[in-house]
Image (tube, rainbow, N blue to C red):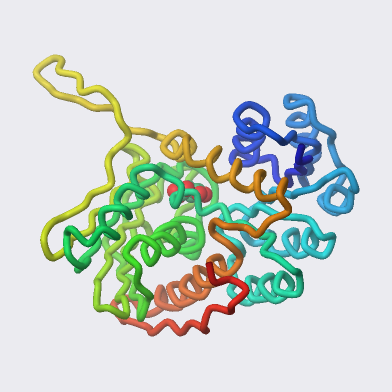
Length: 340
Ligand code: ISE
């Protein structure tokens, strides 16, 4: 039985609490912490967990075997590092950090341990649609990938959303996913800034520069183009299509019945990412729990994946300042510790 301590009881944190309590086996939600103590208390009460005064108290509690970090991206690193220093396994929501330098510190700290103890919440690698696409690509029956078209459309209704967050919170998913999906490495990135959506300026919403388009060139010469549209009002709409020599493979939409009514044919779209990837969260978290139970090596997206994504993200943030210009991305060789 793995005792989990969860830090960050905002929207995603509470969703993970629900997953841990109602969908996982061999673990329990031991405690929660949040800088907003009322939110932590409320969540602890709802899920029958202990409420900690601070993240530090939670991490150092001897009863806790594994830490789940669901705070905003810019404070991930301090909690991940402190969990590692306390010899705890840690599942960190994406991004591992919003800076490559912090990710590097995490990698260096983890490499001093005897095993990989950090998993990053890149849940799309657990989505059935993407894993089926990967199987088709890996089988080579379509030949080699040539072009990738993606859309990441999200109704990010309220609150502050900086231009940088387009990269660290939106494109970061595709940045992690695409090299895994098509078995390639990134060479350069470019950002394009189309006309601004009127919805990005609506009352209550503070979204800078939306939509944006990320273009990635890979070492094998594939061009991937990703639309990031976070003031999209019609739904949470994730698209991915890989054009290959002999055919195309496309991410399936969530399955809903087709309805014909009033002279129209309609199919429902999701409005929320927690519903769109509802099956991926328990899968990734159960895998994490099972590894903690066996005291094994993290098998899923790890700190090196988080670091590589952050190196690419840092370049994309630089590319936001020079729209229309490709900038080269430089990676270091993957250390043996992280080779699967
Ligand atoms: C959110 O933080 C997520 O992680 C979702 O997966 C992403 O699609 C959304 O745009 C983010 O805001």
